[in-house]
Image (cartoon, rainbow, N blue to C red):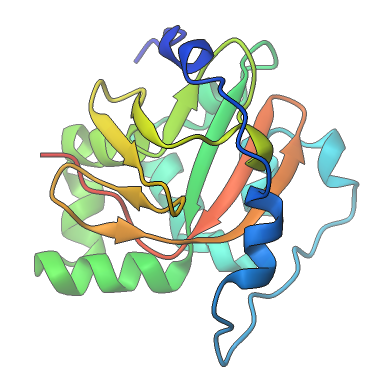
Length: 184
């Protein structure tokens, strides 16, 4: 699958100060997300390597590999913004859709569409300070809405919360979310 740059990101570049401060306002969960465990500085890893370095993304990494997207998402010339669901988010989505992980991974077109719905590629990666309310087009070609409260709403009305932002990589940035986004 060839990824193309989405020019609409630049159009959303209206500054909203304080998304980084929103991390301090978000409700705390009983179990804090574990810090990434890795042997090299995250800023020296691409988005795939960054995900591989954190056990909380093991299902996401498995999914990316099953879909055959690891090479594309390792593109050093890209400027990806990845909304990365945790393992718990994947387990919730499997329960919600009544699918097993094996069923999802076996359906490569569906898996590719779901995963590419979590990725935006623009002229520059969208760090927390750049995330704006409005609609943005994901690599899947589907629309993702960002609310004024800086929540992500998929095309099915499901709402994802940003758990952690600005995990910098050599080819973009990763923001951790608590739900798997599902396109129509």
